[in-house]
Length: 108
Image 1: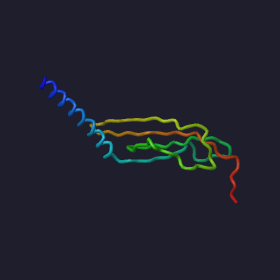
Image 2: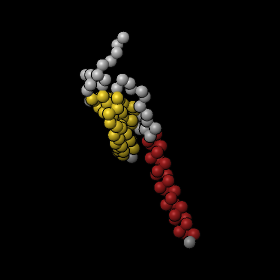
Image 3: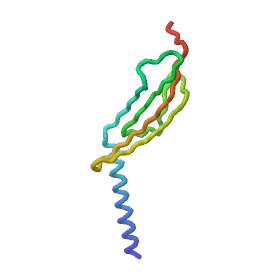
Image 4: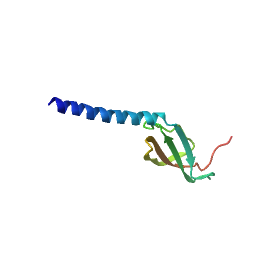
């Protein structure tokens, strides 16, 4: 019975070390925050896509600031990616919003 407990402890310790090394590697990667749209010009009343990409950052608490005069029509749509290359782990999260440009903007 002692052999089973020791075996379980070694097994659990091994996977704990692997799990923690993955977290440490993820934290050690360069963090990036990207925002982009699907076009360079938007006309009054048109919709457009806003993509927010977080690389090696936890985006679970992501909140958009006030984006007035634009309105959120749809979103966020989310996707997550994890890549492990040569033992190095990186991850990204993408949040996509469909926004509506206002009909008229006061410039006074």
